[in-house]
Image 1 (cartoon, helix red, strand yellow):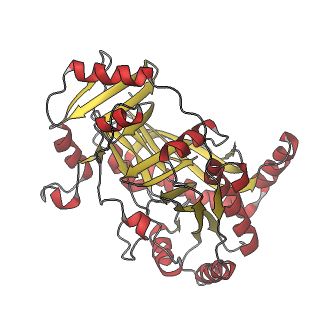
Image 2: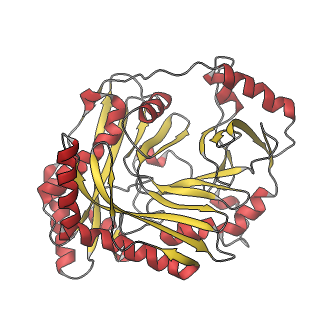
Image 3: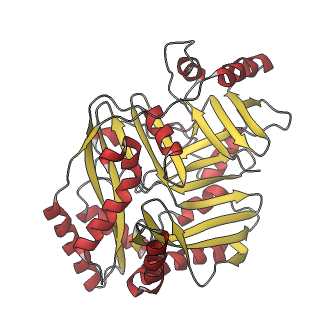
Length: 417
């Protein structure tokens, strides 16, 4: 069974701090430092089997939810280029096991406590009472200044990308931009989380906080979801604006569906996801014609993908086979990623990485970390990207990223848009 909506807190002290009964916060206890892995464990699934065997978990309902490991993966984990100071602040963890997880699913809302030792019922009940008595957080916006990035740098990247396409090195490459944001007071991860959940953005809200640095956003793109032997994925590529009226949005959507450049961009993603599912699944269903996904600021070409997974294939296997897709790297994926190392002036870190969870039954889901930012104190970076093919225009692609950035910027209020 899937986890449903969940919010992971770093520790019990986070719960105490949040609701006014304590004064501190402990970091995640580390489930998988690379240098702590048994060298005989080569595959992620084997590691998880070993890790789950040592975890005790108790939740506030009779049908126990297995413990849940969370994972935030960088877009290009082997990129030798150093990440910026904010992204570099996060530890090199493969999976994390939060001590406290709040779960909302069809059975209701529950609190789960995980530990490497026994978890007694009274420990869960205590924190259930704290959560139940907590007041709802109100929306709170912090004034920000959004600094423009260099148009000359963007043009240079576009020239390099189009040259690589002309030379036949790649058919598509996904370029990104980032903009620096400066706040009037320190950013609050809790405020941004609430603003994204309560705002117009649609999708999966992500938050990973470590010490004072946090990465968050709201992504529309599911990478893979597994429940039993049922698997879902999503092909999401090809973009147009949302209109001022529903009628205008419909006209723009019809133009998007008929646009050969956007359809080609979308088809690269469909081909990869279909090929992966054909290899490790059966009963694969990937429609031949895309649909329209309408969000608050943009519309996308969207093709759902469903299948039944073969025995022995894990969620981690699927995630590693699917990520990165041509929607965030390009095509062919490997060559596009090498090209990005050459022409993008920064290491993306978690932006466009795969972020999600897996439980003790092997179920869970991963999303692609789009429409996101990283923040520390009064400073942060926000990220957006777009697919470049032979017909792409630098000005149009720059504007498309501006529209996508509006999702994360909406967490700062209308003045930031």
